[in-house]
Structure formats: C-alpha cells, structure tokens
Image (cartoon, rainbow, N blue to C red; front, top):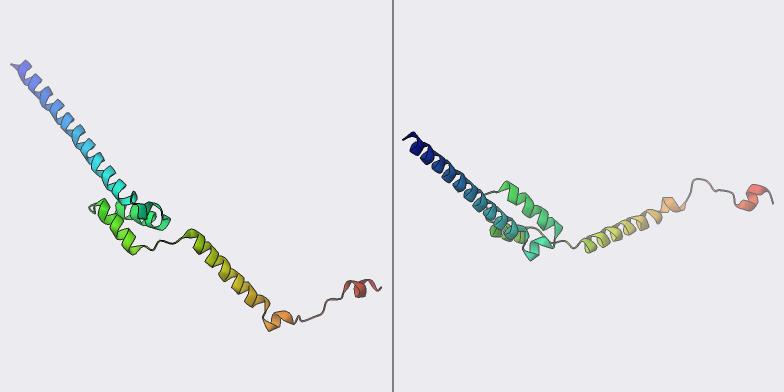
Length: 122
C-alpha cells in the first residue's frame, strides 16, 4: 500500500510540475504578445521618443494591454523627425552667432593692433 501512495504522490508532483511549466509558458506568450503589440506598431517603432515611452509604460503599467500602450503613446507623444530637429538647432546656433558678430561693441575693439608693416618697422 505504501507503494501505491508513493506512486500517487509522485504522479501528483509530476502533474503540479507540468502545470507550472504550462503556466509559465502561457505567461511568457502573454508577455511577448503585449510587448509586440506595444512596440511593434509602425507609429511607435519608427520614432525613438515613442519607443522609449512605450518601453517605460510597459514596465510601469503592467496591467495595461499592449494595444492600449501603443495607442496612448501615438496620441500623446509627438513624432519628431531627428533630421528636422538637428537642422533647427543648427539654424538657431547660426542666428545666435550672427547676432554675436554684428553687435556694435564687437565691431569696435578697445585697442588697435598694429599691422605687419608697423610691427616690423618697414
């Protein structure tokens, strides 16, 4: 009789282990589906700011579905074109340099430097 009880105990343990493995596999599928839905959307994966926001939401809001994360990010994070941002920054720096070079006090130095003829005495 103890042999039958041991066999039943082993069968139950094996059954619990199989259920645990199946549950882990199902959980992994759900997480991958959520991740794919959140960062796999075209409007998200093509823009670094939106992608970063989606990853942040994935970790901070574990109960939020992936589709809802993608929709939230697309609706609330502006898609900035990196090329336009870089050219805007360049134009702003050029305008600032133009202002610095055209100030009246920059055009009038405190002292006049000698020319090369005056310095050598020729």
